[in-house]
Every structure is written in C-alpha cells, then in structure tokens.
Length: 600
Image 1 (cartoon, rainbow, N blue to C red):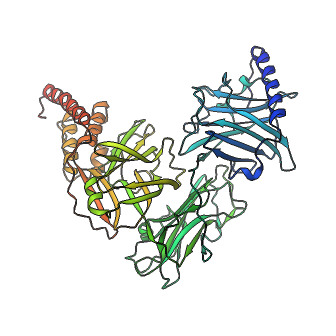
Image 2 (tube, one colour):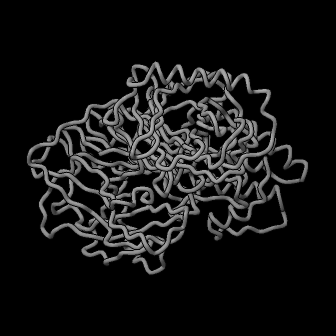
Image 3 (tube, helix red, strand yellow):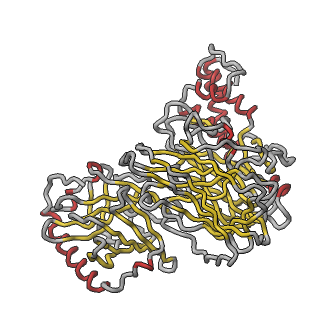
C-alpha cells in the first residue's frame, strides 16, 4: 500500500484512545481466541501464498471469526469486503504501525479509495501474536452491524480485498487504496448449518485429474481434459466429492467441474488442452451434465443419506470431462505443473433414491438479450406449474443443493418458489454473484410441489459493452441457470423458458420503424443480427424490458432424452402491474408513431 502525504494531528487523540482499546482487548481475550482446529474454513488470499485466511461461523451469535496468517509481516495489513471487489467504498479492518506503535481498527474507504476510521468500531480484536509460521491476527464481526459503512455478510459470494503495508503509516487517513498494489479473493463466508452424513464402510474413491498441466502464464485459463470410466462399469452412487489440489498450487486453482458426456455418443475424442482452443473436438460441447463442482474455499460436498448420484451402468456415458479454471494474476510462467482434479466417493450399495440435477432458468437462445450500457438489467426464466404438475412425481421433489451460473456480465442470481402467485420460499440467492466464482452449495432442503412455479432471475451489468449481449453458449453471450441437485430422480432434466419469438419479431418491427422507417430489416436476418442493428436508447430498452415481463413464453419442459413434456406455451402474466407497465410503454409508442406518421 502506498502512503500519501497529509496531516494526521486531527486524529492523534482518536488513535491514542484506539491504541489503549486494543491493549485492553488483547489482555482480556488472550487465550480466549478460538484454537486453530476451531477454524474449519481456509483459503489463500494471494497467489504467492503469503497471506492465509481461516474462519468459522457462529449462527447463534450471528458472527464470523477471522484469523489471518501473514507469513512476512512488515508494517501492517488491510483486510476487508466490498460489493464487487473494488477498493473504493469498501468495509475495512486495518492493522498498521507508525514505526513505533501498532494500531488496530475498523475503517472504510470512500469513492476515491481514501481510508477513514469508522466511528462505530465493529471489528473486535481477539488476539495478535507471532509464531514460527508468521504473524497471527484474530478478530470477529457480526453479520449485520447496522452501520452504513459496513458490508452486510450474507449467503452467497463475498468479495474479499487485502493488502500488506510495506512502509510505516503515520495516520490511517494517509492510506489510499486506489493507488496500492492490493488483491482480491472471492469466497462463500457463510456455510449452511447442515449436519454432515457419515460415509459407509464400503465407499470407494476415484480421482478425476488432469495429467501434468503446465499452467499457462496468463491471468485466466480454462483447461479441459477427457477421461473415461472402466468399460461395463455397473451403476454406482456418488455420495461425496472433494477437491484434490496439487500441493503448492492452492492459490492458482480457482474452481473445477466434472461433467458427464451425452450417452448417445459411443466415443469422445481424447483431449487435454485449453477449453477455448480451436483444436478442441466439437463433441466436448456435449459433455455438460454436471457431476461435481468445486471452488476456492469450498469444503467437501455430501449427498443426503437417502440419495446418491448415479453413474455407470448401461444408460450412462462412460466419458467424463474435467474443467479446471486457473487464476494466475501474477502471470507465473513455466515452473508450475498441475494435476489437480476432483476426488469422487462412490458406492455399489445403491441408496433408496437416485439423485438428479435439473436445469432451471433461461433457454440458451439469442431471443433473450441484454441491451448495452445497462447496470442492472433483469431476465427471468420460468419453470411453470403446468410443467411441475405434468413431470414431477406425486410427492414432488426435494432440492438439497444448488449451483448458480451466468457468463461474464451476470452480477446476481435468485431462484424462488411461487405458489398461487405468492413467493413462498427462496431456493438460492447470490446478490454479489461473479462469473469467476461459481460453486455449488448445500442447502436446507426445499420441497417442490406439483403446482409450484419456480422463477430464476438474473441481473446483468453491460456498462462496458456497445452492442446487445444475446443468450447463447459463447463466453461473450449470456446464460441464466440454476443447476439444482434433488431427489428422487425424474425424467424432467430441464425446466426453462424464453420469450415467444413471434412477439419478439413484433418488437423488432416496431423499433426499426420508429428509428428508421426507410431501412428494410429482412425477416431472414438472425435474431442476433436484428439485435445488433438496433440503435439503443432509453425507450427501446424500456419496451424490451416490458416485452420480457409481459409477452407469452415458450416453455421448455424437457426429458433427459431432450423430448419435451406436453406443455403449451404460457400466455399468463405474473402480475397486473407488469401488464400496466407494458400498456404504458404502448401508449408512449403510439404517440411517437403518430408523430412520425407510422402505424403502431
């Protein structure tokens, strides 16, 4: 962190008092700090592994206890949280030294990265000591402090920021985070308060690892590797999985997933290389059925004692695709070889229920698009009551885990259960979602009944884009998906929606006439080309938003064979206010058309 020039006499009295408070706290809590084994969660904050975070969560006390290990302490450190990992408008805790005395305190940064002491001190120091491993700092903070300068710790992704002070700091206000060489890490701080089932004595293990990958010297790499199960392997149940990281690469392996390939292919070409390579065989695109997913900070994933995920057997593909995301911000080259992967725990003693993984959200289609220069544009995918009534068993299904997914512009995802037009339960929500941190999480079980509707809503930020971002498989296209883990298994593998294309074509026709009545936009143009041709303004964005909220949808209620259940398109609206909103836009459009001599 760089130190800027400035006066600090104004805060000298405050810092003297703060120093006294720290001394009292250390004396009072020395020896009362949780032991190392009391911190079940660990993560390396920096790529070089010099700063390690451990933590535990107390739901009865509604607080998180943090322990930082600094292997090379100089003149202090900064640790904190912010909405998107920015160093501006951040909630901070700072340990700093002026060269003579050390200080600890709760602070925050303004929109320019200037650090200010917080008048409400919510970070409580528990212990600070040196050891042969480095310098330990232990402190705690409530989930919610009711302080406008503090980050509210909640379920989902948390963007952590950190930095080591390389020089003495005379005053806290002389720190400027926006000018400093600091770092960011993403984790899930809060973990579900769920008991861990015991593994049976007959459990077997299988490691799906990429063989000896030299990690490329670039910031982001997605690496794909194809492996296969033994031929004629009978049906088994996966009941647990965990990460298997090559020692020394813990700070570079960001997240991993194991996918099963589509069973209709007798063979999948061998491949071990970048996922975005032009040399990657096209058949790898059909390896999308998620078996396991892990991200930094995640513990082992367990299935409930009554269920397991089936793999092996005649109806299952024996081909698996491992995808590893390497995050290498220091651009380390040539000397890091990795064979990380995921360790599967499975059994031949099948449990009562086969588990399943179902896709909720939006169909991968360009008809669902986000206009450019939008900060919070929402799209919602529906799994309607017509589909759940048709496809689910009489007792419904039990959801016990969830993995949210978008591409690069996604910033929040939320899935809820709606019954009789009322939201009755949240399945999963991540208000600080990042495409660079997508991990499955175990949930307190939710039951989906036959007449339930499931809504999955994604928020997007396209402020850095000049053209519309359409839905699709490409990384620059978008998705809105929740992969839910459930039991008992059903034939319903995909329950998604998209706007009716006929109504979208009416939107294109109207907007094009409004903007340029002399231009012919031929019907043979693709939807992507039609979106690219729009001259975006606030009105065209508002009408598109109203269209998505009110137009009929095309419902995809698909079996695992890709055959749809017999569900008609849904022409109902979710609320009368949506209809009123659309009618309001229509009235504005009518007036604009009349002014230009166009037909509405």
